[in-house]
Image (cartoon, rainbow, N blue to C red; front, side, top):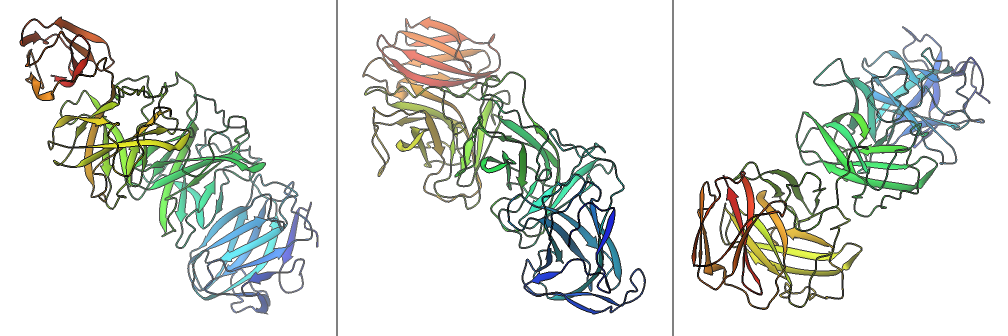
Length: 578
């Protein structure tokens, strides 16, 4: 029977009015005598639904015509439950296309009739032709439920506008309906740290799917598309998470074409407090499509603890924003110092590493990368020194110039540090090499010679392009929450075939306050000092084996000392000025 453009309609009272037929899975509902004809429901009959231990057990009705929300926008249902539980009311299409919308309501007082109202303000008319009701949603408990007086009614609220960015959950004129799937249950409620602020509260229910998520809006998505450009590719979401290190995935798509998507992830770094997570869609999640700027992205969905089945964890979230505008950061390239505010120093962890950019443990004014090889991280856990786009220019390897250096601060001696270079557009074109740490809890310069490839890996092929690098700490050993600092990733450019033994040069004190001493036990022509931006701040010809340089006027920070002979950069040294 049609339930279209009417002011209100009783769909089923199970006494005389049987406008629609209720069915169920895996058990069918049946009409029985009202077991508790008191309170708000004194009718003679009602529907009984025996919920089996199937997680998705439900009652449903296929409608003769699609729902028209031009007048009515809510459903009323009387329900009786033996337990406090959640009832999920869902609208679908019988064809399985066009998306779904769902609203959860809680029964807080068992063993009596409860009036529930499921509102769908702004729902799309003439789309949904199936009603689905889940009692004690997403559990696997066998119980008997009763329901009665299913009505399609007019709502009393204002005509709400379609959601768009930024999403704050504060504007009373906006339709903040969200659409859960896979076992999530979301409601709007008070901020756990500020009760006057309204936020979204998502529970990843017990046994929810690993991919359970929440669309930020109805199936119509945003009223306008996310304005991505080649340089503006980021969104942010405020998240209050129960644990550190949980992957939060954000997905954008075309609401008219769910094959046109892009997904990316960020990890939580704090627990039980708010943080702003940044999602860079130029760094797509592994195995998902890259950001295609010719597509329209007018819908977004968020996934909490992506890849893990639900365990009843609760996530609060708010302020979904596009991070456009301003001066875009330039793509990373060598040398990588982590100190240039105009460079995008985003790095990409895999296998269980967690990396942030923070203060040098020795000199707080210097920014370095801080990598934790997490507990039980893979033996091959690593960190790509960029987004998946790699460096803006390829590493200029030649038959003579085959080396790179990285400054490393490791927790132990003798740990294998592996460096890998590759073509960002062809991950079969790679070369890997290793160096061992020689000091603990202090900075050292590790040299990586790609003419000496790691056992079992490809030799350096000079016909290939190498425009991406990844670093692996304590390679070959599972993670144990060890922490590594690293900095100053550089290509060593030389003009000759000779090199100077590192022991031939002594630089002290380091760190230095006033006078820097350099002792050179080999031929050398020039000593130069560069700041972290590669600007030369000092140069002196070498006339004897011992130099004393007044650096008291230098700003605090990190510098690079180079020592050259007539043909050759023979050494690079990292200097800390206090």
